[in-house]
Length: 326
Image (tube, rainbow, N blue to C red; front, side, top):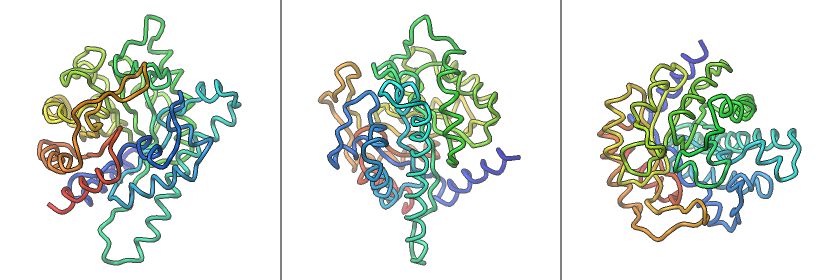
């Protein structure tokens, strides 16, 4: 019963947004613009420890830009990662909960303010708890290769994600966002974990892609979507943190492979060197191009559109403007 109710909540948001809800943009990018130093294995999750007020500020900036969905700062927040920093398991769990609380507080504060203005054009945003891939925890770029090694099997991946999932769910997000999944094995682990834990919060599972055709592992998306398509708990699938020029063909591919909602939130087109921990010079999309292509992506079948690394509130404002004022 819970799944049905929550599913309607997500579908209602898409409908209220004119058929396509807007996901927020690059989180670490905006933290760095405000002076945060996050060149660290915890990445943006470092601010959960050092500057939680800045996290809330960035959430508010994306809401003001027109985001319908806030993704929490927990992408690289894992219990093993916090333990490696000398924190206790209890402290790590409190930080995971805080990632959801900060987003919910920002959403509620923003909504309380705009509701007083009867002429506003905003939607009450949903909060999606971010669950980064195992490769994101390793912080070695393997979320862009899918190569986890021979010792990583289905059970190990489920064990890795399980406690974080339990803690995030208990914190009360509206959605769960499994992000930059690089292979079929981890997608299957996510699906099985949602079933084993009887999770009634609607989820999306998004893959990365480095060739515009397949998952980073080289497996076809047809293979990767096999388990997902059998799950009633996963409400949307798609692509995040891939170059924007891949998105059109990938939406077309996903439309052939699934009946679920399709989510796309690409990066700016710049290339991340996972080992050197830096962005490489490359051709990228500016806000004008995102505005142009967002309409095409929606027309091809995407129901959830936003940005990932190196996109900003101005990117999201451009996307929101064109989707909500066609």
